[in-house]
Amino acid sequence: MPKAPPAPLTISITKDAADYVRGFAEQAGKPDSDIRVGVKGGGCSGLTYVLDLVDEPGENDKIIEDHGVKLLIDKKSYVFLAGTTLEYSGGLNGKGFVFNNPNAKTTCGCG
Image 1 (tube, rainbow, N blue to C red):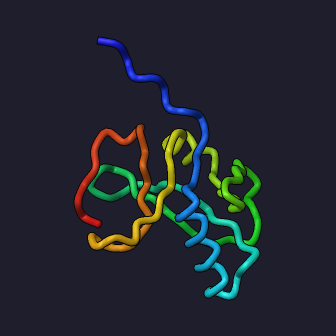
Image 2: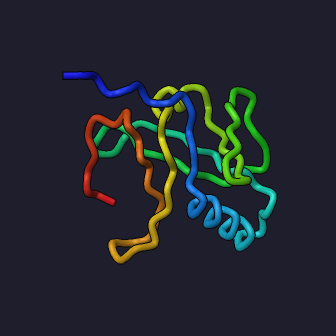
Image 3: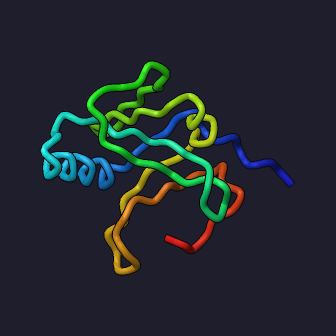
């Protein structure tokens, strides 16, 4: 059986998610903010995703710009997030960001 191709070594954000981030940043009074994307220990799969509005990148951040939004990812989190697409879902199952991460071995339904 052929192996799946490796995940791309980048992180992307969909247009809908980028639009939502810009709108949220404006409502928060921080229209020029960037978004920090990361992971920390915890959650039912061992990692929890983190999103924050920040004014400037950290010293060790990787910066990826997609759909006019700058994603700031610290080097430690980048290893776990490479290949991830950040999406926004506003459907009937609830609103929120979805991390489509091909590296995740498990997922959970805890929100």
